[in-house]
Image (tube, rainbow, N blue to C red; front, side, top):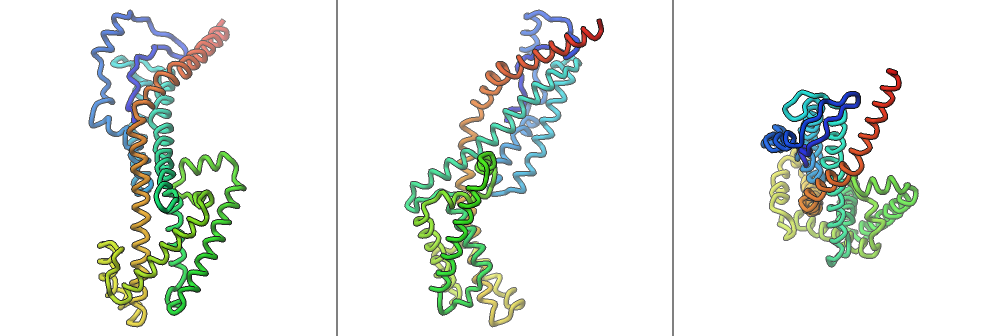
Length: 336
C-alpha cells in the first residue's frame, strides 16, 4: 500500500553518529530529494499484495502470486533505506529497521486485516435479506450441497426424491452439529485467526439460525432438482446461466462417448448442476470481495497516518533510539 516512508529520519547508526547538518540543509534536501522508489510505475508494485488479499476469495492462486512483486519491492525499499540516506551513501541499521517495521504494519498486516474485516462485515450485513443468513453461511451451505450432490447418485432416487431430501436434511444437521462441536473445542486465538484470514467459514453455519439455514438449504436443493428435471428433457431451466446451459449442451457429446446412451444425459445434468452451484458460490464471493475493496479504499490513508504518526513516531522510533543508546553505552564501556 504505502510505498515508502518519506519522513526525514534521524541519521543515527547503532555505533557511530555522522556529523550533524543544519535544519536549513535538511529542509533544502527534503524539498529537492525525490525517492525513485516512490515514482510510478515502480510505486505500483507496493500495492500488488493488497490487490492479492482483496481478490483472494475469487482467485486464490492469483491472489497469492500478487504478493511476489510487493515483497520484492519491500525488500528493495528496506535495503535502499539501509544503504542510503537520500542521495548519500550512509548505511544505517536503524533506518532499515524502522522502514521494515513501517512496511510490515502499513503495507502488510493492517491492510490484510482491513480487507478481511470488510469481507466479514458485508457478509454479516447480508443477514438483512429475506433469507436472514450471512453471505458466509449461504456460501458454506452451497458448498455442502455441492459435495452432497457429488457423492449421491440422483438416479437412485429418480422415483423417490422425498427420501433424497430426507437423507440430505439428516446429513446437513449432522454436519452443523459437528461444526458446532469443533468450534467449542478451538481456542480463542485460532477462532480469531480463522475468522480473519481463512477463505472457508464452516463456523458461519453454527452461528446461523438453524431453521432459516435449513429452509435456505432445502430451497436451494429443490431449485436444483427442478432444474435437473428440465435438463433431463433437454429444456432450459429459467434459473440457469447462459454459460452453464451452453456447457450442458456441449458436454453431452463427450459424455455420450464416455458413458454411453443410457447414462450420458444423467451425467450431463449432474455436471450442469455442479457448475451452476459453482457460479452461485462465485457470486457470493464477489459480494464479499466488494466489501474488502470498500474497506481497503476507506482505510488506506488512515492506516498510513496511524502507522507513521502514532506507531512509528510515538512507539517504534523512541524504542529503537533507546536501544541504540544502550548499545552505544555498552560499546563505550567495553572499549574503556
